[in-house]
Length: 295
Image (cartoon, rainbow, N blue to C red; front, side, top):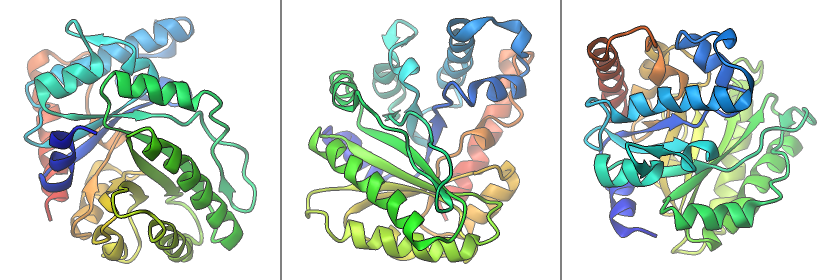
């Protein structure tokens, strides 16, 4: 583990940029950016266009380690370069932004009110590649839709089982059990989730650290005991479909929680914008998310 990166994530102000749209979410992200599906053909062209968008964000003067603590990359992005450097190396060496890798392979169908992660058959090889490319940590996502105790526990158990593999590889896992913002039992699911996470982090060794990526809660400050937990490096929040304004407002009311926004970060960016317009829009986005993350 890179000690400089560890101290930056633990102590510095800022937020984590989620730049990890995968195959399923990429067309929607590109459409919002002004690139219709007719503009590319097949996955190779789609990912090439997506990398251009991500590179434009990362190379922008507005994007740097003063306000952005880390960035989560899709595997395809880890394997590409930005301005002649491996993407993770560019982030850290040039921008002082700590790189993370999305490792999950998507979701299974809903059972017991939740969607578990699909198997990750090549995870050991993937973690080896990530450490070879000097990534600091990983991220993996599950979804909770209902306050089903068994379902919530199955999500958290799966996350921490794989999280221990990630810790053994020398990386810090971001554990993301997202609660659907449209859940009719959102507050009840949050209570079950917090209890299950507290049970799991209580079993970690003193030198084992995880990060948590959680949906912004219905009750302000609800995750304060996780923010303060000695085995939790940071608690970050996903925007989850909220607009940037709504996500920032909710985030600012949850002290010690920082953003890890994806769609809310890129809201308003367009392929048609000049570099000056793009940088100004991105700067406004970063400034507002940073402000909400330092409360």
